[in-house]
Length: 425
Ligand SMILES: [Zn+2]
Image (cartoon, helix red, strand yellow):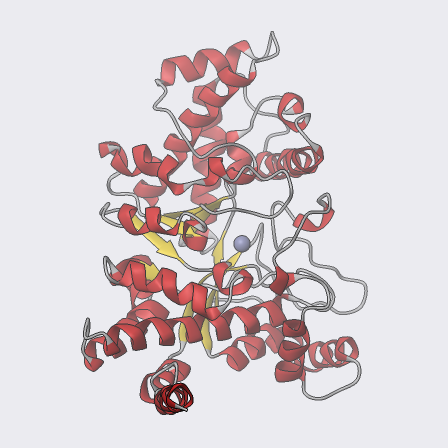
């Protein structure tokens, strides 16, 4: 009886205290967000198809064990489709119809449904229907790190094989945009005629940041290699096939060169720093602790780095790394792969250290027919806002922050931190 009464009392208390403070929940739902990282797809009709949403599309990977939330048949996809497209039988037909109706306004309409004002579009190229100021470009720069023959790296496994074929194609595209058909003979010329002009073109194209998917291709540890050594490796590779370790040194030099050019051009550097898709993904290599020497390089102190996906599962490491003046983190992808309670735990840990360096993100991505970028964006947006609400409510109830500060952090994380970092209007 006593036990039953205690249980009843506990139930009443928890009923009286919703997981998210209602006032905070309302505020959070009304904040127009800036989404730090996503892969929106260009609206298309007729036979047009958009393939520029990723430099390394994960469609062609070998099968692996996906997180429960993202598996085929996940109830979240249906929930998202219903919320976005209404209670219809055929979501694909409805989506198509909406695209035909709204044409180049379709993607803006999707953002309106999510309460997202600005979405960072991590894409190879932009295009009609994804226009500024609602969509801001974040191009890919990994291809610039791989100017030599990539056969030795592609031979590692089937996923790397398709990734390096993609990178080879993208570098060809960049070379062509620079008026070249192949990489120049020396490193100096390569930097002068390809790397710097590509970054400058991306900046002119509206980019405010660039993205590295490096962790899909190699570990994130980057040595400080002298230019003369990198130049010798670059030129030597034209006569003799390069070893993997020598090639790595050239890549390391190129990464630091690109990062420093980004600093000069006022572009932030986004780095995939978390576990990634695929059964061959090297999780240990993606640990953001590997980036510490980069953050600590005095020559790169003025370059702002954003650890995309917040390092998951190394989220405590990210909290510590936020002490670097040039380090930031977003919680995109976590908002898609993980449940709100788990994401809230991560956020709270970061908020107790550096809430001014935490950025909201969805990683909205066209995963499948059922889970398009629209549905993925809806799921991640909902989870992200819930997680934010849970984390701030807990801090409020534990007396760590006052209500006013909770509201302020919500606004900072959903938009103000990004506005400041990227100098948005
Ligand atoms: Zn992404």
